[in-house]
Length: 533
Image (cartoon, rainbow, N blue to C red):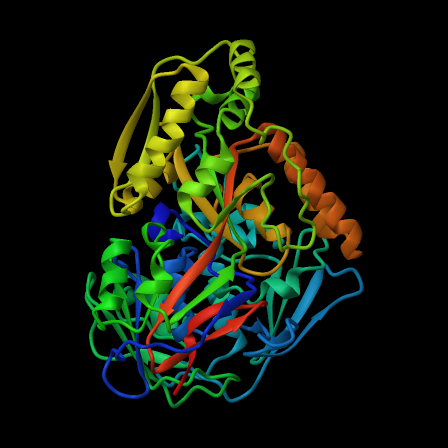
């Protein structure tokens, strides 16, 4: 999805899959226990899980860093990894985390509670400007580290450097006091944005942007420069559970998804996502080496909340109802139209949550008139490194032009440039975006994208009423009651519509003859955890 749309995505996908488990092609990557994974995205500039919430970087972080807890691929239950125990108080407001003894970083430094406390405090400081800062917004004392700042600007350094709710108890234990009870906090600890950094990295993070030191199953193999393949070797010091089978892994970043696909067919990589341009041919291109899966990713058209022309909700509803989702999903391939903001296989999904997602050109025109029309051309931004970026943009643009009578123009840029312009509130016009949860909860679709402080608030959306309902859902210990509150938050977001739901996609992958990717309805299709034949 990242390669197709050029957007930031959470990595974890809950999937149900089918496939043949065999491949007719020659294996790539050399030795029997090596695997080359192609990622259709711009090359990484750095590796730091605390400053990364996109799929291209998190895939590498999964190999190099170990989380506190994880989802078991067989049962779907939460299991401990670096944590020995995660214990809430009676209200689920204060959580105590005890670490397993004997773990260390790849530089030999023992892993202690101080590493988590100091790493989290560093990320929580707004002036650090790391992407996972917003995760700590639920922790007591967050506001002191994140003073109010003009939209799109980086907060200035503050005198306070630590979260008052984050306390080290002893060498192997620490506690987290939240501003309000949050019964799902333990589940969130599997997110790699909470990975620890060793002391030497914390002292000078920029010096380690391209020589990361993790605590996971793999370490950097040799030197790595921006734009090069990322080569990892199995680290013998990893004592955590469920170590992957490969002795070495290479992540190869290829900006064009079609090029990445062709590299697989040429035998130079072992695993690749199938791009939209190949959804009708991949089964014959690699008849014995494909797997498909229902994805928990959701895809949207994002409207810029910072542009006054899009301020009226009726205008946004008009844009939504001008889109023929069935036709667009057919164009994308392996896709179904979306009628809400949540992926279909998440508990709490409703089939027709959206009142403005049915195609109705006449109603769309009426809503546009009631909103007072639209001034100037509608600009649609697309990712130039995607073979289908312009095609998808023009498909949406044609619907807006034909069904609303508006002038449309298109701007092609690299996905990373589009993201940066949007993050600084300088992007003109619409863009495509997508999201896949980091832990299997309806809350993880709503908080990142629609809470005013959300890490993936693509549109710059801010509604105190939604923030309030989200907080009520967070504080509700009864899961079914919590879901009802989260659904109320989704209703508010759908009424405001900063993001227009477009489609949910079935993912497809190709793999070489020597590997069998791990496939789980709980943790997805993962090349990292391939078994070797």
